[in-house]
Image 1 (cartoon, rainbow, N blue to C red):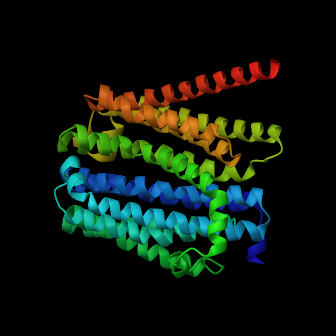
Image 2 (tube, rainbow, N blue to C red):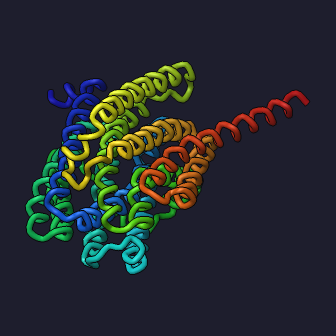
Length: 420
């Protein structure tokens, strides 16, 4: 049977990886095409809106990690019931975040220098449509149906690529955003048709918490909060450079930098696929297995980083011009720094999510250390795009070093107490 063929982990992961990579190619092919169709100001507005969307959506990636945690710590029936409660809570949080963006849209529009207010209406619609997306894909991942999730990723990228280009060529930034919205709706239909299991009802998500659900929530409230902070916070950092660029520089400079950042994001997304494949292999009771799994993951990440950086160094004088157009020429050095930032962020995220599955407080310490440094340093040293992205890369390294210092200090303190 078809279901039996997909029961093999390696086959399932391989198909998921291939479909997701093809989807990523369509996602990133969209930006070079739009960079040539739109003027740099409109292109900067488009990338800034999608960056805001991705930063808010990053919060709901916590559902994936929580699902893995629940499966590993509970029997199947209990894990499913708890996952339903967590899913409901995260969706409520997401809706609240969407409303907050809508309320703050005049301030955000002024701060980020986005010209057309209709862009924020479309942002709100994209976020609302994303609710069933994150609920359904999170539910399928919890059931290890990676093939269906891969099909969604592929179809969503393809539909958005076609529709954003068609509508963007005629209606500019607003048209491109309509393309993203309609492409997501079309992919949701594909996901519903190929899911293979009954998907969670959105009506149940919006219903009030029942008494037994409140009891479950009380036992998990700290872990849920930590997951949102760790996963959402680190996910927010992935596009924080574009947000800084829109706030610190004029629209022309920010638009050029946004294109460079999007190119570096390709490495981030390819590397992040590795995280979702590796994390389910973590063994709560076997540190030897965990070290082997993490070691393999970091070796693969290192190979990916080396390959990407070699290409960027060799072709640094032509790669941005060829992919994005003449307006983006001579930006190779900034692309290298942006790639280093993204690779370092993935490396930190992998270890932070590993600690989160183990329910270790060190996950919070690592995440907060890196987030704090990334929020502060660009405001102090980001007077140019080069200095801004360089300060972000150094912030990830500094935050990691701060974590190592705090962790070492804690170990020494604990050892002293044990001796005494």
